[in-house]
Image 1 (cartoon, one colour):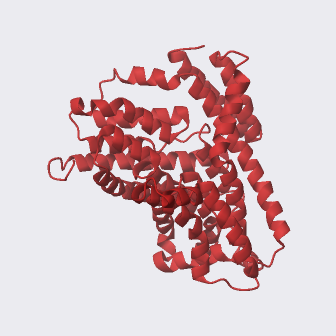
Image 2: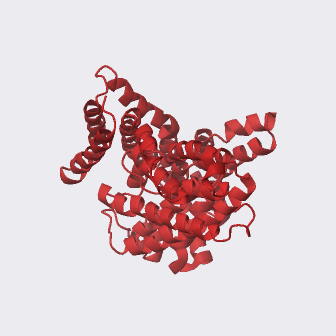
Image 3: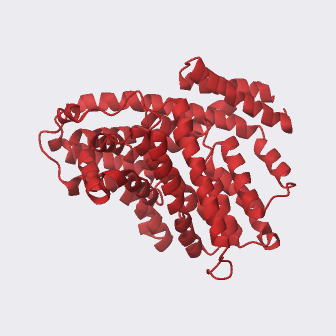
Length: 447
């Protein structure tokens, strides 16, 4: 198998080849990802008899986490949209934030939601708001996709109790309470700059193929009975509340029946299944369309998303199997770079190469965390710099890239401009905020 710099060369060639297949030669993303995964495995030198196992295990392990979730999420969103709940929620958000600030409202809402809820689940649940908000405000749907995606991924990487930041806090020996507090402080400007401000900028420069429907077209689809605001928010919040209850029960009632009960009910797949069943029953009076039609449309949409997401996981598994992460670790330890910047770059490179922000956070903190006493920097600042590095540079080997691509109805090129670059800008903003906090070393507790 290849080692050293050639691993990086093969990885970069594989990415270029993948982009050419999808963007230039218009190959369906699922087929392009699957072919690239096999071709990359051969180029790296993985034994022929092992390649099918590596590819299929990567496909399967990815869908273990998000396969059922995507299918249920599409059905859930279909019923919320058909009942008028999404429209009602959008109207409420406009009243609170106003038309001009509605993308900022969605970005901050995403930041809050993503604290207890995994990125994939949160994006699927909230994606139904995108078209409704865009049609009511006249603001590009691309702006809302950017705001939501960046808001969600920022909190996912910066604020515990999501797994990545939790492990970083543990590995760096940071006080968890202070780590959460400073994580929130860092996440807010990162979300507003990368999600809201950049979202407004890129939204004026990109038009999607499925741009916003006119209000007149949406009026024809309104349900026969108007749904209430309370019912709308209640249905949207149900899976979020169940997942949050799981997190709280683990913290407050470890080892008890309460933790066991909510550990089951608050599992993201179970929580969404319960929410779908509730939507089918409770939203039926507000839906004019035939249920069979809603199921058919949802399954058609969800099936292709599941295939593409799984293929992205297969490509990521091949890259991970190559040992590129170990090589990067060995190489970067010899670099003469300021500690916080090194932690950020280290995590960013692992994030891009391995396709998982959580793996990048865990890997970097596992290496640099034990050295914190010798690095001459606050454990919290080091941990925050690591977390900031996990926000951006999502590439096609990341399942989240394809979730945003499909639910945001973007092309691959648009996804890179909107999601990958928006996240990178948010990550840089987060790092800058960490450096600002470092100026108050000795004044702020824990810094």
